[in-house]
Length: 76
Length: 150
Image 1 (cartoon, each protein chain N blue to C red):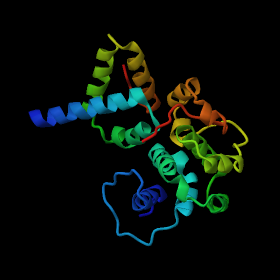
Image 2: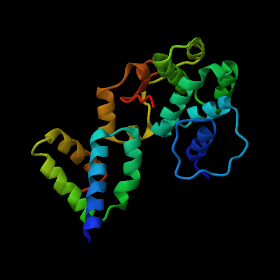
Image 3: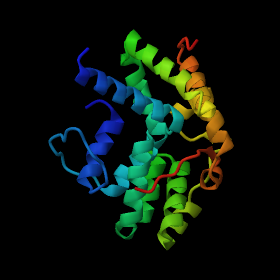
Image 4: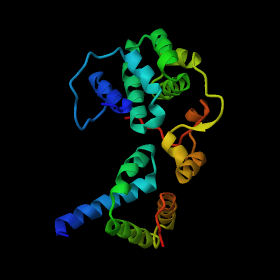
């Protein structure tokens, strides 16, 4: 993965992250399209980020975990 | 363009709505705003973006609307509870007698429901919505925790 690709990927993941935290209707619409397009590596980064965020925003991390579990993801 | 919501976005752009489109399709003859609003009320619960565009347009263009025609069109092809809600939310932002008369001609749905269909499908989103349900939506028996003025 090039540096540019990695930066783009990280940006997309943080965008999805904030959409799950906000959870407005239009975020749900975007997540319907974005989440299924993620590969296993992207998913692993998102879950790892969630565990990192739990250290300083456990409420956000819990919301993200519940949402991903609703989508059938393994979060442990 | 099979998706009715996408087609409505194209029409809202033609009518001067605050909508940003990835691509603009060849313009057909524009319909009357009353018809586009009426049809939009049937689809607002599928799209927050559509809801906020219609709400914004109503606030900016209420003077040019024929309220009797709007009510007739909505009875035929739309949803009067959604029209009532949109006029209520618009009236909060910009009070106008036309909004009030239209609201009086509309009635809430029979049972309390989440306003947006996507929210209804997610237990988490629904719980957040129930905790923060806004009064203007509750008046029309809807549950919704967001209201956007563009």
